[in-house]
Length: 400
Image (cartoon, rainbow, N blue to C red):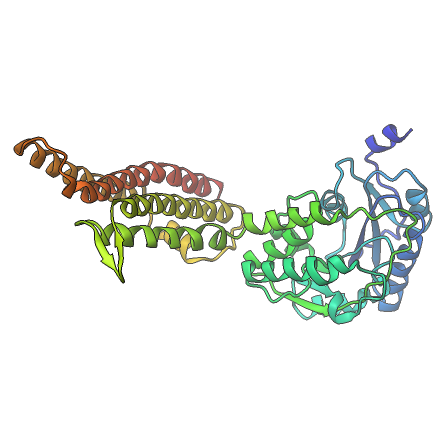
């Protein structure tokens, strides 16, 4: 019986035929104890606001009476076979007919009677309105201490820095947004990280975002919550790092590249002594390694920026501006060739000197040889990476 139910994609519900202005979307998985309360509160809010609204329950495979209850109360039910918080919401939001969409959980932890406060902020011109549980009030027992004092604050702080957006509660499940804004977000993640993806995408697209206080009540479930602290926490962190190339690639890459090149230049002519420390050939090898690693990490960051820019047409960054305005395959090939030839030229000089002498070990040129070899390898990397970058930019141009 359950398998047949999951394969059904028909929608159910009732309406007046008038196009709704506001859609309330609730992800649902076995919420029979609370789904009715949430649906009734949402419809009551619409009546109090004097707007035409609809309630969509995005069911994610319920085996209890959740669908039956929601349908009886006038909600439309959309069934999503793919498991996950983001997958369910994506299905429900995709089916929404309203110009304004309000989303929130179906466990009665969020106050569906407060739809009006979110909609009013949208009417003021904001594209995404976030609830903030820490400012609105977290009732005793509503949030585990691990989430309240560690998980949420830490992940929200990292996200706020990574995406440069003044949001203090990235994981609040109650939020409102316009249909146009959601279409521009282009969300893809199926799991709990969907909550972070929405804000990150909105920030990258330069949408207008604000926060308003909202309350969080203890849920009324008689089963364990769907959230898995460490698994879902890692999924959030993984998404943040993936979509924050400045901090994942550029900051560490440039640091490694800078230290490595400084060592190579400092030791190019031979060992030196710095504050009583003798730096010799081993530090030259370290410099070469740091330079090569740093360059490749920075290059990955450039590639990541190009990929993200393809997904989000509204993205603004100096790197993207340079890629689309100044970079060309020819420029990359010329720069790479010059670096390669410079390294090979120095190596040729060392070879000629060796040939003209007694063919001995020539320890005095080892430091210079490291510098030359590093330059040649960097030149080849730059040339071949330019082909890949040109391919990405070419696909981007074709897509537009």
